[in-house]
Image 1: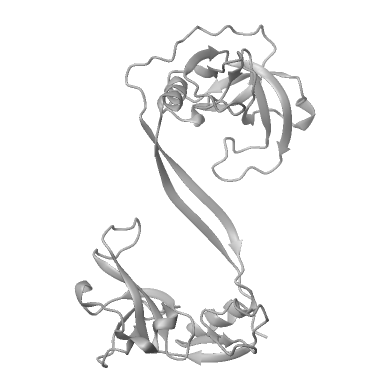
Image 2 (image 1 turned 180 degrees about the vertical axis):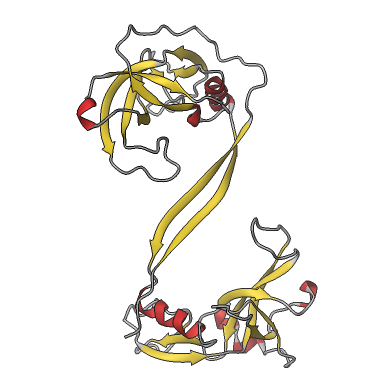
Length: 313
């Protein structure tokens, strides 16, 4: 049995969104070191504010300032902070009900250890040195034994309010492709493409998943396919992806490799983008040291007949 592979994987992208009046006021307020909540019809103050009452679905718009001090309602100790978290040393995740609010906000509490944290303890916001208009303008909470601070009565009206934000989204995890895909990746390292055949329906799946998606039975019979194949369908990409050194426009296609019953996707090169077509016969192009084909290019063969690949669209 081949070695089962595993590797660290990072999925990261910038998430861009526009802000409505409530969220705009909340984040602009943080930039100005003011915490705003929103009043509901029955008099509750929600912090962080939302645009609609979660109970009645009533639209909300009456903003009210709350204090930067509050009370811990529950907590959990974080022994090993991860990259990108509010603090680099161990801290507590806390839900804090700020004075004047009826709901709690989740953030970090800078405390010397778990024995120093308890439900009901009083805390205060520690503001970031350089606010930008994000939840990170609250650097963290810190223990507080003084008198409750009074809010200033801000109405939520600001000069130069924020209208949109860009929030980086990132997921770090260890990916293990499993037995079937480990064998597939191992074959690619030898510039071969291998799938697995279903013992019931006899279809060959590339890349293999270890089980037939149609019959639900395990697959184990290894079948080498390709290297040539047929373009079944495609799209023309006109927007350049970040950190991808490919000039636009270019073509990304589904390719049914000879002998496979499932199309895989890859970039098409070696031909003008506006000449790529369904049925085009292609072959892989490998670069030195690559673990998978860089792209596929035309073979010069006549186009495949539609009936030979229509079931793979």
